[in-house]
Image 1 (spheres, rainbow, N blue to C red):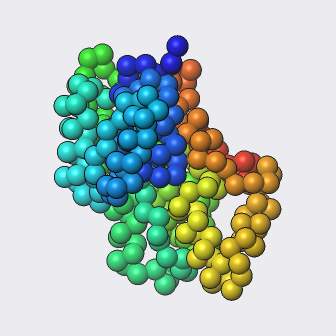
Image 2: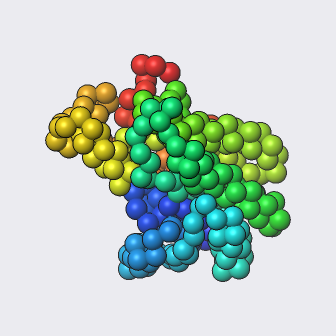
Length: 265
């Protein structure tokens, strides 16, 4: 039996990478999926692919820097399915420029904070309110953080700050709503084969004047498992955190990084 049969799941950043893989995983386990992203063409393609595989999925275009988009997204999911059981707040800006802290522009800093941190908070705000109102009450939320949020990242101070902030948001909200039946956890993602990582490696390769393959080899040297992760591997962690198997898990930062940070945490 599929362990999430009949449940409703919302996935932001669902058009590619970890979000796409998680949308497929939710559908595979029987959940009705609402996936959101800025790119309509890619998002609709993912929804159609899930439907073609026998799952149930609908796409909604939403920009995580737009409070009205986020509120409308959650409301649309409620109107369509009547409740919200799971939310995976995964959307993030993927084209941040690499720069030293003093060289980050105010515009770039504000853009990252709006998309990566404030957007997650706004999603949680409306998702939690929905989960408090529905009967039976409760649900599970997973927010995507990053290993960069555990201790900072060279040439990525603003991005790291957003991902660290997500961990604090997650832990705070988890304590506040635990007795309301809402579990809130974070996926702390390492290096995965996603457009965001590809952009970062291309940028580093350009700065160092070396080939992309050389940068990927450098990444892999820091990973005990010796390879970049597959998005599907991150998705399985999210599904577990949302499932009844994790019924006593809340306020947790689940690190999925192939052992990359094991020596320093």
